Length: 194
Image (cartoon, rainbow, N blue to C red):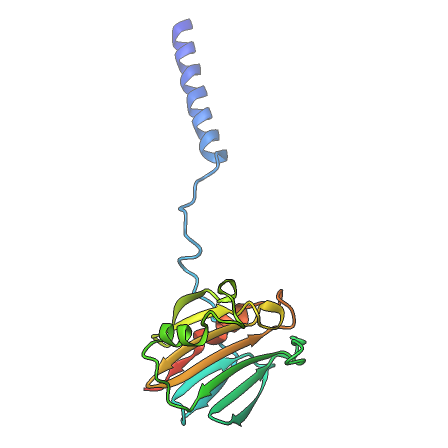
């Protein structure tokens, strides 16, 4: 009888231990990738839209920005101002500008245009030739650079050529620490009209 009691006691302990383990052991949940179920947030969804039928493009800009259009000789400029950017000496209110050259461009590529405009000479030694990076805007090849002899040395420029028309974007920040993120977001919204 002693053996039977030990076996029964053993079985009861195993069952009780199993029951308590089942009740109180942390249950694993299936792992769900939270990013997989999230829709990407478009930071430009509430922005205003600028549309130019004359030059065939559309772009968005932040709600609080203002803009003005100016004809300057052979160029047409759209000046966007961010009221939080206190600007540079040249543009004390801060500015992001799109300049469209209405003069026909002879360069076949933005790289060719760049090499024609930034040559080593008496006013520009080799170490002051900007380095550029390639990118696409509206599916058109473009270049982006910071001219080291610009005011403050941090005014970004982006250039593209489409149908012999030169498009240039400038970012004149108040300081070099002024975020380029919004400038890049504005550029990402630029599209040519079909």
